[in-house]
Length: 335
Image: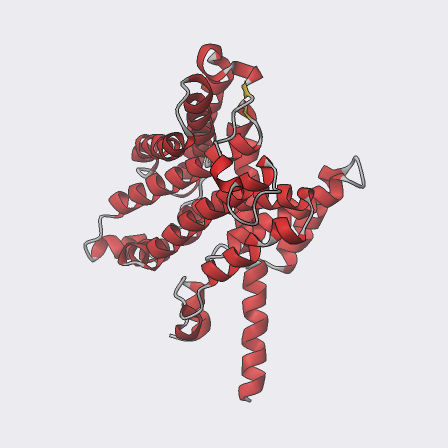
């Protein structure tokens, strides 16, 4: 198998496998509050959360080959789960955060049990249907979710201990929360990397390439797809829990279908067959959105036009185009 083919199926080349990309990117991002402004740190927090959200979707889309139109359901469930636990019940963040992931994973298990029984467009539409059910509950259940008013003023976790560390004394709560988000997202991404590189991830890739052949050789396709669906929902819930705190409130819009469309665009834009593709897509889409909205009131039209051009120019995503370019350079050097 060629190096390009290995990358296409999610296998790291041997040389690249020795480079600790997660650690290097983490260390680079760690310097942002020192070298950037508070607004840069604000954007960095949002990008980190969206990167985890998009990478959780890619476990379904890029690794397993399952197109989900309702991934925002688990993002929103995690947001509401963490928000209710922290604001309403007074549960500390260190318990509410993992609990939000577990709650989202439990819903993913239940919904996925029905979804994996369908394939292709029917699977995608059923995921959207479940997501709309979740949105309707969040929008109408005033006593628990706050209805259309949502849950405002979700508290930040207690980060006073972090502000006592050398070099962190002058940072405000927003910058301290950025460090916390960065560490938690890095851990989650490292876990996702281990999953996709494990035998479990290899089976998911096999299912993506040819589910009939995988079933023929003895793979329980539905069980593996359900496991992937549950895990992806859990990580989406963790990203939603962080976003609810970052947004200082949880609202029904977090579960609406447009949020699923946003994360789908991030994933495809970056490149679904590259591990870091969704993170790159989250970075590009967030920066584009921020820049365009600052210059024109017609930002949806401008942003949509730019995305159409990018997707046509880079059909394999941004990292896919970069991979093709690097492959051509290698061939020219070898020639």
